Image (cartoon, rainbow, N blue to C red; front, side):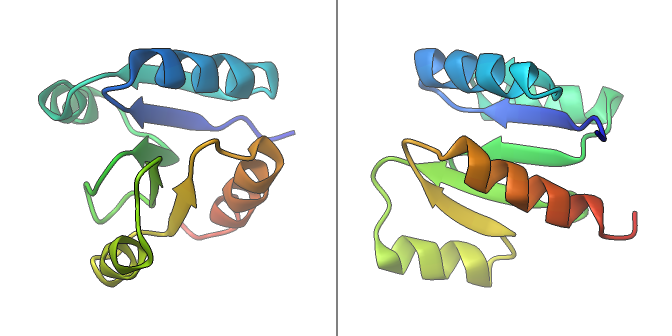
Length: 108
């Protein structure tokens, strides 16, 4: 199975840590941070297959927006801004792994 390097950016620390633990059990390598500025510093030092965050980031890296409060309008706006996917919490791990597999097929 291919290993994915993921950056999880979410101010809900318990959620971010739990998601990272579950993804690590599936063979992913997760880096977790809780603030956008921290994520930007990490992105300068390391490349990721995917970023999971509350809202928007680098266009060269696919972004999945993860939210517990998003509306359909939010989803449409995020997708128009270039998000790869929009997921509502709680995140379905199987659905996320399917998205990761599709991203893994994209040329780098």
